[in-house]
Image (cartoon, rainbow, N blue to C red):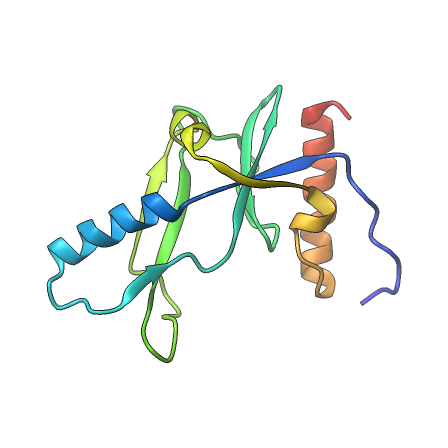
Length: 141
């Protein structure tokens, strides 16, 4: 990886609180799957950015959709099973929701894009640069 310092960004990412939604989905999943004994977990932190072009969502690895969340494209969050000793490698359920649903969630924190997307290797740096360019254009920074 390059030893260059990451360029900062003026784009702010809002991190929603999925706690209550996760509880509801877990309860519903348990009701449908009585043999399920584990917990459902988010594999990573998610955030969103409000722009004049719409609301974009991404995770801490810089993975997300280039299209804003709208009536034709909903935010998708996949959940994984956590047991005493591990977390599944494939999702077992998930949920999709609209911009309105997303904006109803409490925001736990707001952080600059360069702090939100974690740093480790070329893939994450490439993801960061792509999002920085896309979102700064959309925000109008």
